[in-house]
Length: 118
Image 1 (cartoon, rainbow, N blue to C red):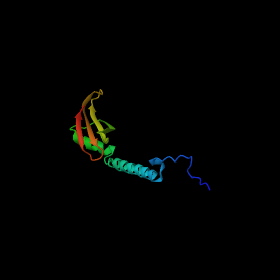
Image 2 (image 1 turned 180 degrees about the horizontal axis):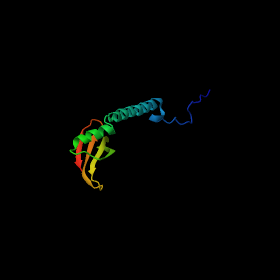
Image 3 (image 1 turned 90 degrees about the vertical axis):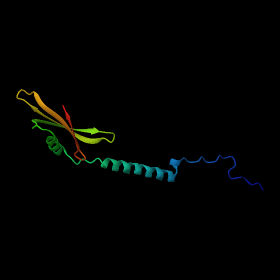
Image 4 (image 1 turned 135 degrees about the vertical axis):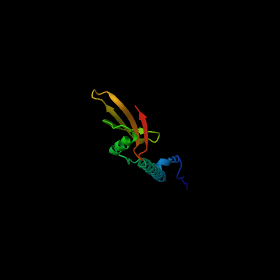
C-alpha cells in the first residue's frame, strides 16, 4: 500500500505582505485616520478671529493720520502659515500725490499689529 504525500511536488504558498493581511489593512486605515485627525486639529488652530473690517479699524488706530485710501490684503506668514491682514493706509493731495502712507500687519487670529512705513 503506497501512501502519497499531500504536498508532493508543490511549492509552499508565498507569504502575504503586511498590507495584504487583514490586520495590516486595519493598521494602515487607522494610521490614515490618525494623520487626518492631526491635520484637522492643526488647521483648526489657525482660526480667523479678526475679519477685514476689524483689521482696518485696528490699523487706523495705529497711525497718526486720517487715511483717504485703504487697501487690505490677506497674506500668509511664517512656517505655520498664519493669516495676516496687510492694511495699507494713505493720504493723497488733490493731484493724487501720496502724502502719508503706512502698512499695518494685523494678525488675523489675535489682532496683534506690526506697523511698517511705505
